[in-house]
Length: 98
Image (cartoon, rainbow, N blue to C red):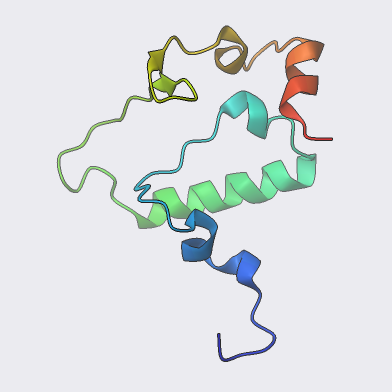
């Protein structure tokens, strides 16, 4: 980067790194564990995205997400990630890094 003051945390391409990921998936229950200020900013950004991007432009009505094990095998989505309305304290604790 030419600009010494360039904040790499603001570069979306750098966030994805060298992965070939075409999508970003974030569990709702995990996002709800973030501070209120973060949730408000995220909601604003998602609304801006919805106002700007036509996600149905190529005939796509929706997407499905599959859970994978560490070795890439399909697994059932853990109930802890699906239960965003009433997560257990143990789920909240497990999601937050030390």
